Length: 293
Length: 331
Image 1 (cartoon, rainbow over the protein chains, first blue to last red):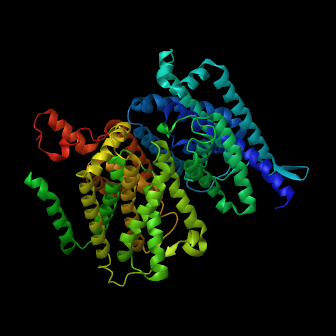
Image 2: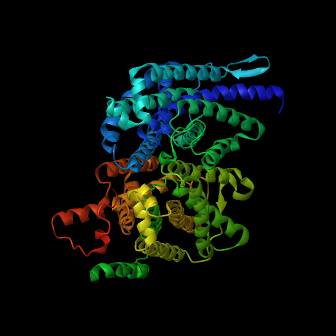
Image 3: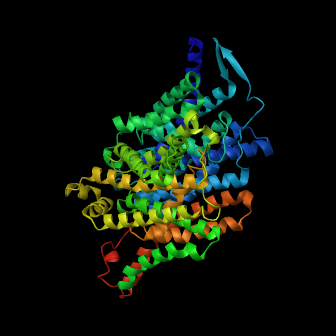
């Protein structure tokens, strides 16, 4: 591999990693407050990608602008799903919640197949094929835009969690729900808002990933594998970890794409996933003990 | 009591003799698939019901079994009826390895590992084109039998697989091992403290649990005479196992069997009712909705719920070994 190609892989990997980080942050946020992997997380991303694709086709709404539509829609839907279904399972066997999110994933996949057919789909805008060259590095415009948007949204999430009362309440609940309740946090409401926020992050990733990759109803099983590898490497429940891991794996995937073949690139994620679980189950930045892993 | 003991034997005799009277391929095919799913669901329940660890990856072992058995026929001419038990054993060994990775801890990593394992095997099946034929799949040689008899060896071997699964489940249920698994489900910390080697128990339970999926996959590959990466790893298979076990009752021997005998005919009927272009999608949605509804409103399943209801009315027989040992099966 030539030096220029390597430099290009690093730039592209970093930009894609930013989008992965955005979607993985939602998954790790939800895990933090609920202690459950949202198996439907990637199915929600794909659903949002379809929605964005549909808005672009019917109304001509730019996919980047459609984020302003899908995020509020998914926030409300997430809050509703928590209120109607997940809240009732709180305090019971956690496996029941896992099974319900598995059910959601299946339902979303079936809905996508019924509404949009099972064919490959991609969000192609007039600028989708544009690219520019800097210092011999060739960067497609959509990669730059989606990476930049993802970083801005992540920055927003970071501020919400770090500087607001809701953020403090979410972090407290993640650390210890019982103590959080003792100091006056309404754990049920905070969990609902955190779930809705996590789902919104998935929704924001939909248009971005939809511009970068082709998707079809069952793509979410591939994407959930990637996201799980990211959150496990970063340490379940750790946002900072998810960000670092997403960039690392985005880079590794890009290098694998170029060095070997895109066919084998997913193996990077699975390799890291299994490797981390064998060597260091709590991941890079994990604070949770073996109990909850 | 006597009828309870006798009923399974009578049912077995009935199913064994049935092909003499019923020659329609449709019914034999439906029963064969019901046996297959029931056997796999009984297996799933050994981990998901007894030990309380839900696997989202049993189809990975089903697909693994399909491919291994398929390759053994194609390259070495070993018939699946011979290789199926060994394929089951291989699945158990792989399952133990996976269990070692994910079951030393408690909980989430097991969900993650079982979910992703399926895609690792599928990726290998897709990409090792030289061995597996890649996305165009693998064709198995047809059995040398007349058309109307060809279903019988599959019918009987699936029935045999179900019988073995049920016997294994009963044996575990009555053993110290089974009690250990239930202790793990109820309170893993205490089980650990009272001397149960929880990691070993869980790994062993998972190995046994997936062996039936592996063997079923082997037989299924020859039944279709074909394996490909989409067919062998259809997630709907895992989904079916889970729903069957939940509907019948998690943590009971007969729950998954009951669930399979309810769900399989229903699924077939639903597919028959819906227009073929969207039948697959509608089936998917329906199963997902059923899973969510069952978890929300009847997580204990039919057998346990009925047992509780009878006991409340004061008509339960406390000597009834099945229900007395396990008052809250899916707690």
